[in-house]
Length: 123
Image (cartoon, rainbow, N blue to C red):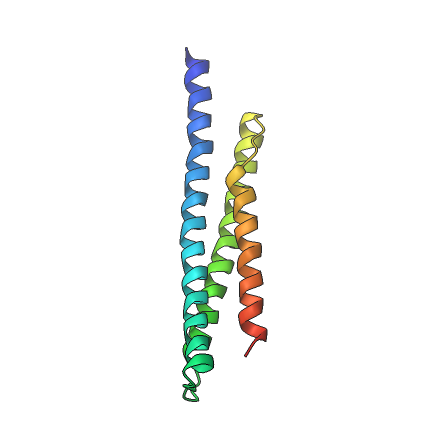
């Protein structure tokens, strides 16, 4: 009976790490997509309506790039933290675990880097 409780406790802990990383994925995807939306909105105003942004030190484009950058950095740090915690748990319990949310997080992070690169190098 005790062995079953311990096994279930380990599984709950692994799943808690998965849920936490999925929350970070949602948060980061929101930051990245919001930043890119702001960037595209102001690019639309410039292209279609001929409105040119006022020269500012920190304008809408910089805000959008900052939001995307924060989203990407937060996601990468969350993946690293989750990976370390799961590896430590694997060492303590001799149970190997494959994280699907970690794979999805890396895909979202790469997409975020791509969008950030587009925003940085296009005027």
